Structures are given as structure tokens and as C-alpha cells.
Length: 360
Image 1: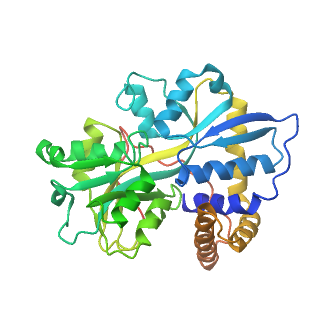
Image 2: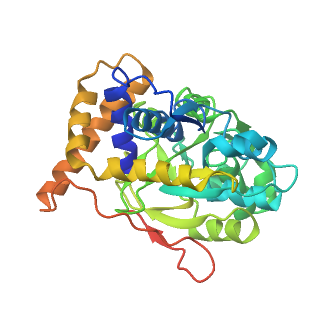
Image 3: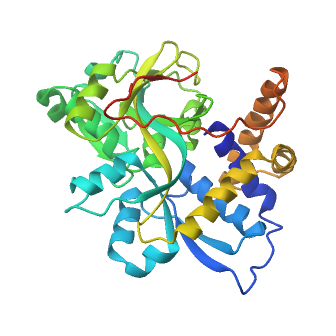
């Protein structure tokens, strides 16, 4: 995801002033992502620019939504949207929808995957020097995303609920306030812990922090990252949402002094089973073609980095472009040039597969 998220972020800024007018022949596809500031929102904005800029028979109209649960419900309830709408979602939300578990009041038709673009994971971080593990959070205030924001709300709550004993969970003062709000609450000292997280590239295994995580890590506070433990992740996967354990090594993000276990989810672009296959193919093709165009990626990174950081998205793009340029240099130093490696299909967690992964 580091390559894709970083590139797409740069692309948002580099193309925003030069997207040509849509031709009358193009079919409009609606793309529903998640709240502004999330990685999925950046992806949606960038994919809109990519497709509308390119020579494709489709154009994209991107909009933010309250979260993944809303996206699944929208496609289940709106027959017309099934034909012309794609969404960002995860394996986890799909499983909850299929089972009819909260936040869904009843079973929903699971969506079909157009393409994987990352593994996602969240964990807890604290500024309290006396809190050294998740167990030390007993009776404490924890801020996280809203429940419909499954990765940032439902999943960390499920880990606390299923990975630890009932008395511990009942003692917690959990606030489902939203991703950015949780980060702000921790930085301002209004809570004892909050969720942060990021993305793992399914090809390279590299880790990149989410926008909200960057905000927390840049606050200047001395923070401790809390290990979910592999046992808690496996208990949660057995009882509830299908997370799989990944070990994040020390130094993968600022302040992470020792490896920690986290519960990861598979994230991507999804559509209802009724969505036309020809459109799904075009969208997948657009993402792949742009990822493989090394020179285009380099030029767009340079152009994006040159833009003034007038908005939060552009500020994020400026930082992302620096990371992207570093990745290009790493690739060239390794003798492989700047082109991305061929896409691979990561093993999906589940029966018959080894669910244990490590991030480098």
C-alpha cells in the first residue's frame, strides 16, 4: 500500500488543476469511500483523477461517506446503485455483512472484490508512562473511530471484547468519536489511549502510517504503542471478525521501540455482484496501468511535492511525495529500477493458510 497510497496521494495534487472535461460518451461510475482524511478517501479522490484523466470509457464521481458499513448498506438497499457504484471496503466488513452482525441489523449480500490495495490494521497508543500493556488500560478512557468505520471502530473494540476477559472489557470507558477526533483527543490529553494504524503493502510488506497516525506521531508527545498480542488476535478471529495476526517490527513507525502484534484486515475496491463485469475490469486495469508507469509516477511525485500545502490533503501529499521519492531511490539502489514489482495475490487469511505475517 505504501507505493499505491503514496502515489495516489501525489496524483491528487498533481492532476487536480488539469483534469479535462468528461466526454458525453463516458459512463459515470460513483465511488463511495470513507470520511475525509482517511486513506480510503485519498484513494477515492486519486482514482477519480486517474480515470477521468485517462482514455477510459468511464468517468468517476467520488464522494465520502460515514464509513464502510454505510457503503455495504447502500449497495444492498439501492438497486440502481448496484449497477453504477463501487465502494472502498474490507474483508472484515464483508464478513460482518454476510453474518448479519453489528453494525448490521440483518444479513446483507457480501460485495465482490475488484482489487486489493492494502492490508489495514489499528492498535492502541498511550501517552501515560504507567500504561505498559493493553491489560493496564483497565478502567481507562479509550477513543476510537465510530462503529461504522469498521477498521477504526468495530475491529479494535472487537479485539478488546474478545481478546480479553469480560471484567476488563466492561471496565473500559470507550468513546466511539471518529478517527481524527480520537487522534485529537489523545494529543489533547482528553483520553488515556486511542487507536492509530496504517497500511501494509501486500507485495513488498512495507508499512505506511495512516493520516491520523501521522498526526498523533507528529504531536511531540512521548507515546507507547500497545501490543494486542497474537493470542488476542486469534481469539477475536475465532469468535468474531476475521482478523489475522501481523507482527510490526520495531522502528516501523516513530516511537515503536519493540515489535507488536496487531490484527490486520484486507482492504480494497468492492462492488455488488450485480455490478457490470466490464466496468470492474476497466477500473482494475486503470489502477494497474498507472502503478506500472514508473516515469509517470516519478513526474507526478515531483509535481505534487512542488504544490503549496494549502489544504490538509495537500500537506499530506507533500509528506507522501517525500516518502515516494525515498522508495524510488531504495528501488534504484537495489538495482531494480523504479518500476513496481509484478502484482501478486496475497494469501487470503482463512482455512488452509498460514495467517501469520510479518511487516518489514
